[in-house]
Length: 339
Image: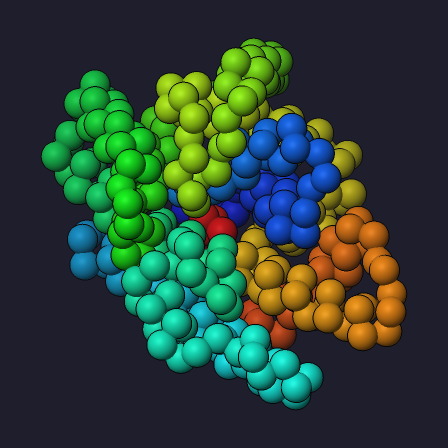
């Protein structure tokens, strides 16, 4: 149980840091196809699982929707608009006007198809998907009234519906089609939060996740594009690897000697929302910068450069724009957020 609602849960921040860095790595480009596929198994599902882990069912519907609006919808619309303007300005200054995305395309992206057409920051589909999935799961919790079996049945139905969505010829607005699969992962997080994290479970869940990966080796896994391959193997693999990551993070948290070493990682996990917002922007601008000076930078250097430039971005963002992601500047101890 989460007894102190204002104290951050460090191992969740550790898990988020690992997942968000993997996300940045994937956006830069992974040369090994198997590594790319394996990371795609869990790097987004784990955020939904953590959301379910931190889910508060006792919150009134009004307060719940308001909080999710502040932490998900406001950053989605505000920073989506800011980044679109920033990209347009950069291309204008560089005299690459043909690459400026039209206002109509931008509006279509931000108000409709944000999973396939997002010229400013494609990962921001996550905000709306998580918002919708949380609303759906809130209703499921109200209906099930803590009857675990009914809740399991309902989130399983959502997973089935989410799998069927990949047969649609057109994507649904705001990532609604991905939201049903996301509801399942939120439900998994909600159910496992009562379970004690034991280190001996690490090889069990890790091995199960790797087994599903081997069995589904010919399929491409990507939650955003709804490429699930065998849906049973996908959900088992995504949950297993995500839980394994949480168990590893909990093990590191329990080893007190590592806390000082892990402080930078915790910083990334606590501020993963800023990485979610800006990683694509910095990836693109840094590539333009290095190409301008004829520098062929290795991918690992680009990853490190993004992390380094994110540090002042986070400090400035938290100081002056915390309101845009639902943070209160005057509150020192904040509860865990999903990103």
